Amino acid sequence: MTIPTLLLALLLSILCGALYHFVRDREKTSSGWMLLLYFGASTVGFAVGQWVSMWRNWTLLKVGALEIGLGMIGSLLFLILSEWLSRIEVKQESGV
Image (cartoon, rainbow, N blue to C red; front, side, top):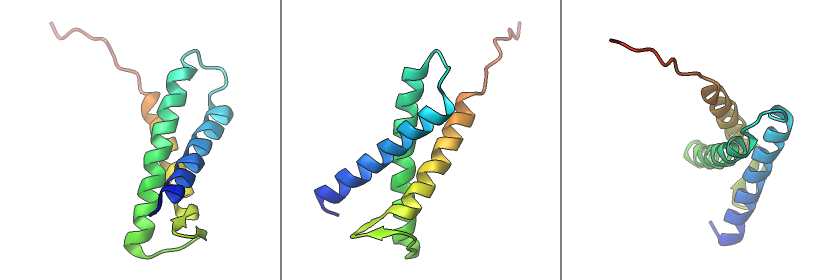
């Protein structure tokens, strides 16, 4: 992959994370940390979707060497997973 392709992939994944944050987490107090979490999860998910498309030789929406369709699907799955995992609360219970 070339550098412009990687930059396009990074731009699309960050855009997915920002849109997900805008739709899902408007009223949270820790929205800055959640935005960073969504950026990271979206980027990793996009990369995993791209890797799966190259590994299985699947195409959904291909632009040059970049598989945008499966990258977006991977990004969305990782965003949903990261939001779900971030909502788990740890009990502060003493075992003594």
